Length: 194
Ligand SMILES: [Zn+2]
Image (cartoon, rainbow, N blue to C red; front, side):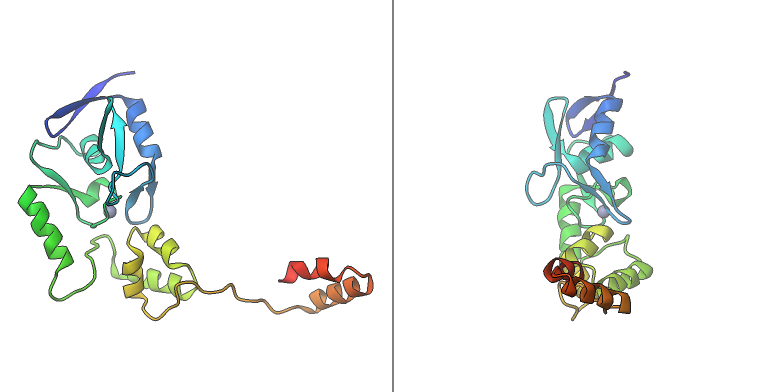
């Protein structure tokens, strides 16, 4: 297996095909963000042990897919999702750019929404439709790689969870129940229809 080196900050990591397969196995690629499913180091940032050292998963992703992370630079998220390791959602920034960027996204004067460049108008409509169809807030958030709070701001007023709709009994169902009743098996038969 051929080895190669990736550089993250001042460190050089020895990697091979197995390292990168092990990395990408822990990534859930949604329509939006690619979310790290391995262990996290706090504040939602993933981390992974490679070459006997721990590194941030988003930094490893950048180094594997894009190129070296120069010492002193941060790997920042366009999407504001710490667990995201999708290479095109990542960019290099200085400490002050990183802080400015975070501030701009969190305190944008005209919007309370976090900034998600991968969420298009069509995605917004799908998010609303998914919620209106009764999909759970958390499930919608995972599918589109956004926070549950963001989903709630796009589809306000919808309940957090919609109960499963009850289906109407058909003629066949009614006759099954009648038959079970006369045979003395009513409770086991009704379980199917609850
Ligand atoms: Zn992302």
